[in-house]
Each structure stands twice: as structure tokens, then as C-alpha cells.
Image 1 (cartoon, helix red, strand yellow):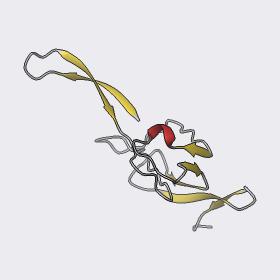
Image 2 (image 1 turned 120 degrees about the horizontal axis):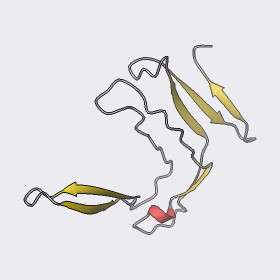
Image 3 (image 1 turned 90 degrees about the vertical axis):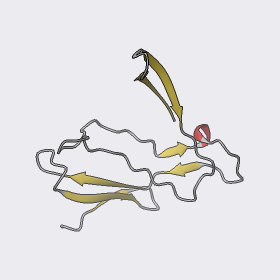
Image 4 (image 1 turned 60 degrees about the vertical axis):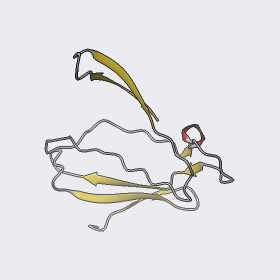
Length: 110
């Protein structure tokens, strides 16, 4: 992942472009991705829709080499449901895919 950002130079107060690159050295057996969905310094969630492919190839983000194929198949998603965009309360549900590729909602409140 490559992130571009602009920083202020402390001494001369000029703006400087900077890039930060994050890579994975070894692909894990199971990949878990947690997205920060809460606003910084405020109570509330970020409501920008996220699209995630059902098949993810991690190879472009790898810095090391391995015998493992860094290809992952999505089979579960955890979602925080809330009332009025409140990050401090709500309920979690999970969507899981079975062996026949059918998605199911798992909700312990029903």
C-alpha cells in the first residue's frame, strides 16, 4: 500500500511531499483485515461505502517471497449496526459464505 501525504517542514515551514509504503513480508494462512470506520476525535462512524473483492491477490503488496500463494477468498464479514450513526452503541452481525457460495446473515439477537 502506498500513501502520499503533504507535511510541513519544521524549520523552513515549507510543504514537502512524502510517500510511505507498507508491504507484507510473509502471507498469513488466514488474512483478517480490520478497517477503521470511526471518526477520529468524534462520536460517529464513517459511512463511506467499502467494496471488497471476493478474491484478493496479496502479491502486489508482498516484499518477501514464499512458497505460499497469497490469494485469499472472502468468506466472512463483520458489520457494526447502529442507530443514528452512533459509534458508542449498536450491535454486530456477521455475514458468512457456506461451501455452496451462499451468503448467510448471522445475528445472535434473532
